[in-house]
Length: 325
Image (cartoon, rainbow, N blue to C red; front, side, top):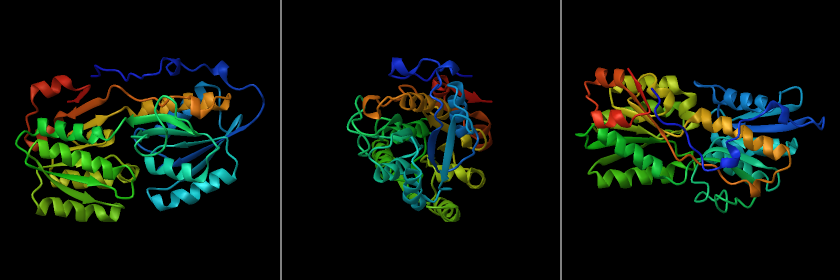
């Protein structure tokens, strides 16, 4: 049951889209998407494309969508970004920090719309949130790296006796280093030892989980990443076999994860269409403030808790936006 709603800072960007607002010039706009995966559960790109349709933009009619998908192989991103620039797209949409950086390096003129970026100012993507100042704007998932620290706090609240937490990151993701530092800093304040683990691809998942077992981790924090999402089924299987209370993605908490905490993915992708519409109508990214969530969704899976023999404190359940029974 949901008890909180995603709230944004920009009153001007929360207006519901109107199909009548679609461009009437007859031009077919080219939208470049520099993605890490194309389909998922939920299918976030489908949400974005539906958002465009709500404004009257239909692929194959008045827009053409140029896809470039890394499939979790982030070393492909610079070349893909260059391809989109050479194809003369009108706007590039990027879903993660490393994608945004690749697009930024490829062009300083074509508008770039970010979705769910961690600390866009600290990451050097924009000058500030209110006036980005360049060709990049969009939506952040968090103002800074504090999200990882909050996830560590929630894991401790759910498993009060935990003293050692494995944190799994992808070193190919440019945001993960700072998120790992934040998670480790908060863990120290909670008297928790952190076991930092890395996986650049699915072939490294098994060794990471073997290390967790060997070092007797009591819980697991998986830092959000497109490659992890792409191989969610394999990751979920390892989580289930490890029997570690896990805070991870919204996808995983629907199956074997214990908790998830973060901004609503579908909401971020839906609102990205608003930015694209504004830019196609002539707005400059430099003048469009970065939109950020002020509320995050906490989801707890009680079925997983029961399977692990955990009793979730009532105080934590009352804070949850959704409880899976």
